Image (cartoon, rainbow, N blue to C red):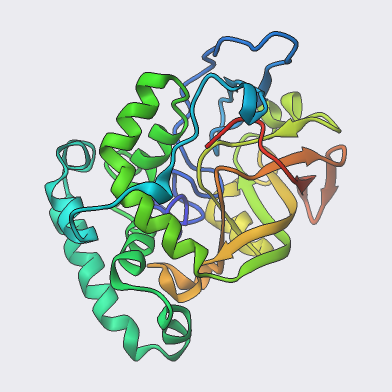
Length: 294
């Protein structure tokens, strides 16, 4: 989904929308995070351009504590949390409508044979959290995936505290649900609309971490048509992954065959730009470890 896990036009959560999708996620220019001595800051994309400067640091020296999502003990069910959390209500004004869509979609999934295979080991709160992330509210701002990913990209201690306060219980259910899905390895594609900024920053051997959830697809045509846009100005990232999660029927946009990448995923650029079928491509490979904590 664009960011959402699904969705296409209109900045939805789909692979072609905004947010965390194949090119999603509103960029906010360059902001500098204090450097760790002896560590070189790197340019890391926000799932779209312009790019943002984030801290390249190993977890044990990071000034930002790792969020202990698994230690949280939510006091509300997922839909209750979405409707009652003041931070979520402020970020997503249409949350009542979004919650209604999620409830309807979740109730319909048991009638889908493939969805049943996905969900038989997953409780309802976790299932609804995955659906919530893929929901497309019609525009990026106010869509759950977009607002969540914006918070995830905030690396300051204050920002992390706000993230835990607003999104902590949602993240608990979401990550727990994703952990129930089988890991996906192989080649996926992510389309970005402005190749100039990407080529300028993505040099061979450079480590990359987006720091938010990122949507990709195993279908090259989805990356092209959903978000890349004009082939002359766009770029397709061809990424070899080992830890993606296939959302499949647990998405509002199942035909996108969305493979979701964790904020923890780090990559290295493994090729120079090259042209194929009229589009510019760049190869990346997933690496072990994190550049900064999540």
